[in-house]
Amino acid sequence: MRIGVECQPQGILAWMPKSLAILGAGRVGRALGRLLHERGWRTLVVAAQSDLTARKAAKFIRAGQPVAGISHHALAAKTILVSVPDDAIAEVAAQLARIGAQQLRGKIVLHTSGACDAGALEPVRAFGAFAGSMHPMQSFNGVSVPPLEGKIFAIEGDAPAVRTARSIARSLGGVPLNITAEKKPLYHAAGAFAAGLVLALEEAGVQMLRTSGLPQREAQHALVSLSRQVLEHYEKLGPHKAWTGPLSRGDYGVVAANEEAVAHYHPEFLEAYIAVTRLAGHVLAADPAAVLGRLETLPRHAPLLSKAKGGSA
Image (cartoon, rainbow, N blue to C red; front, side):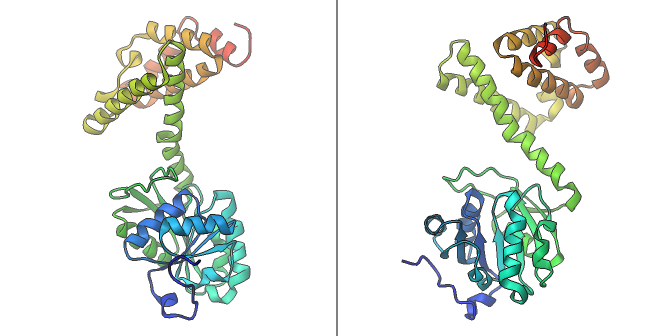
């Protein structure tokens, strides 16, 4: 059974500006495909590594001919959306160039990586396609489709590709933001700080609370509620008024006690605690140099750090 629109490269759909081929059926590709389908984009092709995965993705998107692998079917669409892992983008572009050649002329090829720029698609440019990148600042869980209204879409690349990316972002209710290619890694690192690394800190805290005697559910609820409150204050009041904890109050004795407790709990956690504490002093303190200097004088600061790194205390 085929799902959605038949793939007809010579048909009228192939020349519609809002026709789309999705290469990569992961979390981002499926979610964007579903949302774009709901907003009038015609998804002609959904490609994945296997036929089964492609069929599941097309069913989720509710449109598109499922195709296993990269093939000429992708050339049916005006816009080709490459939503694969970062280290696979260049190979997908090379495959498209081998398969499409001159048929790529005038096509828009966009990838969704936050860290890579349009240069990862260089092979398709050699045949006249316009390359760009379009990254929504949003986490995707692969189960539900997140709303993208008001979310930043970082966009860069060739002018026609940028125009298409901006059109996609606006059709999803997003806010297109032009970014230079050389700034993309820093942009992506910022997202990593606010998402994946924050989650790591949250889970570390939960594990420490569980060791302190709290059940998993109660530990998660306690810290998520605390984090949510701080982030709400940050959004409303700014970083300095929202800053909380012993360092914000200048309670260096408490910071030292925290370090010792964390070191005895799990030495590797200490490095993270010290690093994040120093980062807080750098970005949140009114006098960062004074705070960082005071941190260096904590009674057990150096011995504990040596222990965390595997040395002798």
